[in-house]
Amino acid sequence: MNEPLYAGIELGGTKTICLIGSGVDSIRDQLQIPTTNPADTLGQLHTFLASQGELAGIGIGAFGPVNIDPASANYGCIESTPKPGWSHTSVVPFFRERFSCPINLDTDVNAAAIAEHQHGNGKGLRNFIYITVGTGIGGGALIEGAPVRGNSHPEMGHIALPRHMADETFLSACPYHQNCAEGLASGSALRKRWGMPLNEFPPEHPAWDMQASYLAEFFHSLTLLFSPQRIIVGGGVSSEQLLARVRTALYKKLNGYVDALKLEASLESYLCLPELAGNAGPLGSLMLAYPEYRRH
Amino acid sequence: MNEPLYAGIELGGTKTICLIGSGVDSIRDQLQIPTTNPADTLGQLHTFLASQGELAGIGIGAFGPVNIDPASANYGCIESTPKPGWSHTSVVPFFRERFSCPINLDTDVNAAAIAEHQHGNGKGLRNFIYITVGTGIGGGALIEGAPVRGNSHPEMGHIALPRHMADETFLSACPYHQNCAEGLASGSALRKRWGMPLNEFPPEHPAWDMQASYLAEFFHSLTLLFSPQRIIVGGGVSSEQLLARVRTALYKKLNGYVDALKLEASLESYLCLPELAGNAGPLGSLMLAYPEYRRH
Image (cartoon, rainbow over all chains, first blue to last red; front, side, top):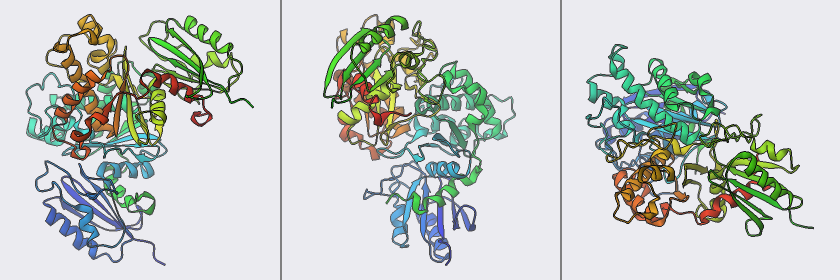
């Protein structure tokens, strides 16, 4: 008997990746396309999936806000989003009409957190947070093995941060919030403020310290609110070079408070890159297709 | 056979309450004393408990930061705290030396959250947050029935908030952070800024709107990070009069984002007082003594 074949779709704000395999160690095909408009992106995914033979399940890790409540009539539909054309797009219903296998959807960051928990830097942890700093900023908290969900999923990138003193007049890159993490420290914000990506600046340029300061403020709040064992930082803006500066700024902001964390001894492991790098989201999306991660 | 008799101690930053009973509906004795210095406060608790006959368990809900890890050699010890005389006080060891029954300790806000979950406004919820706004600010998140714990317990009151534009020169009431929620919006901060408690001001005084604005910013972050089904706000500064203003300010800050929350329809139940009022902490501390809440 053949092993069951799963599809994992990471529907990201910039690009979409689809993996086909029986597990994370046996990927047999993949597709990577830019996330353009819904008809084009979903259409290409349909063509690719239809060519794969019988699927035992489809897992989808989607950008948000997206309805993740399996009991809702709008389950698997994108909500109001600044991404042109995608507000109220029906993602799960699109695939349900075309495939008879079970379909399970969560956020892209929850999917990445699940992959890091099983196969990466979240192994053995009871409480950690996965953050992506890319075109946007998002995050998922994995507590006692399950992503935190409530009314919906977290939208971590939109919490307000105090302005950096050299950044008082910058117009936020977020259309909803003048002072949120995504508006001030995402890849979009960096490009809007400086005209080019962070990694093109020399190490002494002030862009580095401002970015480190904003992320340290963000991770300071996460540390105090969740008391996580680790914060894993993925996404195109994240790098060891940046995280080294963020650790220094975070240690300074903690200012000796919460000494139980003994963070001074372990900041390098406390704040780290995803072990699976850019594969965390796609592999986690594939895992969402496994029977044990289905929620309905 | 007699029912087992439990003791619940809420060791608060300002006052300490001890309840004796077989359950939250059968309290047979209680003590309320100011929290002064450790020798005096713990001594009075010892005298009171020793007069009660055989105890089946002692539950303690303590102010933080406190070591809540049962596997640690410092379990039940207060950590570095601005509260004079209490840094490194051994609370659980003090009672262990004097009583042979099981002793279980958590934070005062986790205790209050447990009580509200079973007997108050948290009933039936999978994900809610209990916040106290009193002398200090603290919070606990109850996710899938258990308080969120990681490296230690959350210290929610110390996340940074953007300054209110009419409050740029105020010196924070927190010795650790110039811009944290506790430093800007606790009872201590209100007294330091205005010279008297909030409820003594007429409704048109700007203190009300500033306080509502700070708490709305705080709850905005909690909403985006945890996606809770409810935020319950206790403590001496909290009141329906204040929460009504906070709801208006929170709705404005959300700015149409996260529409799945449909908060406009349900803000009154989303942001509410504890049903158990000031009893949430003491009753939750008693519940910590029950066998089912013990963690060791």
